[in-house]
Length: 439
Image 1 (cartoon, rainbow, N blue to C red):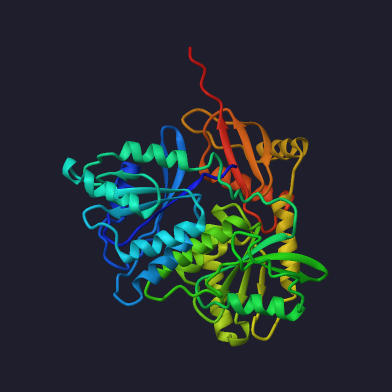
Image 2 (image 1 turned 90 degrees about the horizontal axis):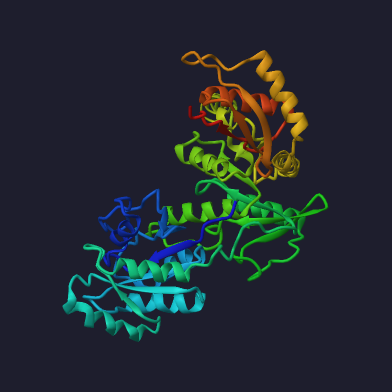
């Protein structure tokens, strides 16, 4: 699965970033009122121009307070730029450049990422001259556009496509090397304590690999004689200023860490009720197709009553992820932290499982005989044969004589797990229904 290249849209508040993103997407997706701190959950969008697909990250939600504004913007732009293959820098042509713009320009220069400069709000011919004044930023040709009216957006998009690499430079199929593990979870569940415990206990941070990877905070840690690379969801060491749309950046960072990892250790605070945010992170890891371990942290802070409630919450909310091994830990006292390695290894093994076509079809034959698909409007769709298209995560394609009910496919997935294990890994079942023959 090749990853789509990523375009980060950066610029001060109220220069029309979101409007421009909507213009590029051709639909109203981004939130267009620039209330400072409007955090948005969905800030990355799939876009397509002339058949080239790419992902747009809209860096909205910056708080425009007077103090330290330029520094804050620079810091947030840096995060977004770090995650991107190319950058669309939006400036308000009617205002010209400000100190904040200059701060972003410095970050852009350092990043050495390709930059396309958009001079927005050029709603008519008279403002063209204002736009050309932006050559002085030293970022190349300013493209005069009007997000409001759509003027010039075609030329701008051509330039964006030219700036984006064919495939992203940072494909996350980093092969070889230590296994990559992301410790993810909502704020304050003890991710940093866990990482510190892992690194501190073993006292063998083999190398703090600064600058060798995308993010200088990867740690190589030896667990039980084997070296693993822990991808830190930044935020453990570099606190983004609280005022910024920091939840948005936290989720962007979590997403990035999940993308780069092979296995995600999702840390949940056992002393508190399981929240929507916890479930969202579990879902993010599953949808990204990564191996998974659930670590219930702060176990030392739970009493019998809390544990009873937790068991109930897990049965109610986390049932969908029952395939992921769980470990009850205390990052503070070190309780069961050594058991994490076993869970991580089990999940990776499940994630990499390959089933031969022979085994798979014998299994599908047994299922079809014992539990055929129900008859729908006089027809009974059959599974003709199946194949495992890939592992990491195990992905199966079933060729069938017609469409099948989603619940039947879920049944097949459950039985696949019973038969072949796939501990700690999502399982993807895709359907290829045979086209009806035209008479």
